[in-house]
Image (cartoon, rainbow, N blue to C red; front, side, top):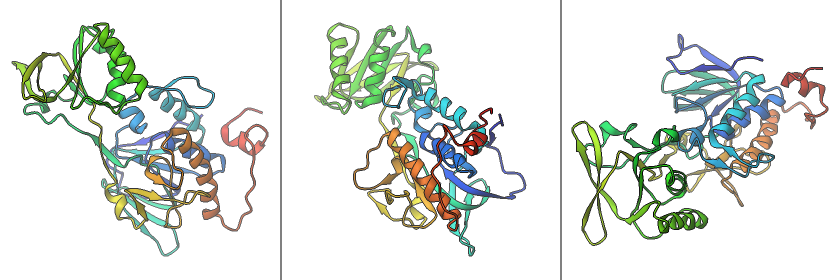
Length: 355
């Protein structure tokens, strides 16, 4: 099988790369878009502002279990990305990571000039925007002196849950990520405290109920409070002081702070590409998931249409229909045929299935 190419360094000589499709975003929907395009014999380059493929699955919750992927009763978020990368390997997608697309202009021949902040230049027949919520960064804890600890004693995403076992942990947040990790770590940490700014939680009710069970069993403590001040011991984190609604301050010893305040979603330059927006999402049709700009398509969380559901499996469906829309856009003169991967010799050849 061919090896996938990754380009995350400065582009060589700023040469123009000619390609059928540029996919903006290398999360699960962007990766599956490669597969659907590949089945139709259409090649793609992917650009992502992160330094690795996977989007939010890899960046925010790599170990989180996902239960609604067809035929996989349970699948870790990073496992899903790894499986998708293996699935698209026969199509040799080209990755341009750590780069943000800053400019999209239509050429006189109907194709697109696409440029990144690092100077990479594409001549593309079509564009797929699969950028999730756009360019994003986790919301930071915002306490004085926090920056030197970020990525170490203060984490906004968990890469290695095993390294947290036996530690004093304080988790901030009230959404699904905060509750998921609270439940996961409550029986593994030396001590665990969950801090949320209000009594109500945004997480799934079942997760909140499970957290309350663990609290009643003495496996964790829960506070309604805000982060107030870091406690340090030389160059080490010693804990955090929290401020309760009545103004009292409480000190919580901690070796590790896990902060899940959500994301700063920003469409960034995408908002300036001339596509029609609705509530900071890209409006698409549901026939081919094309935006208001012919040749520019959008799949996954970044698009909107009547009945839209922000689910990975919905994004996979969108990618399949977008691929046929892109095929027609690139080759309007050709009649389209629906072929099945189980029986089509052409599909088998493209997938590398042995005779």
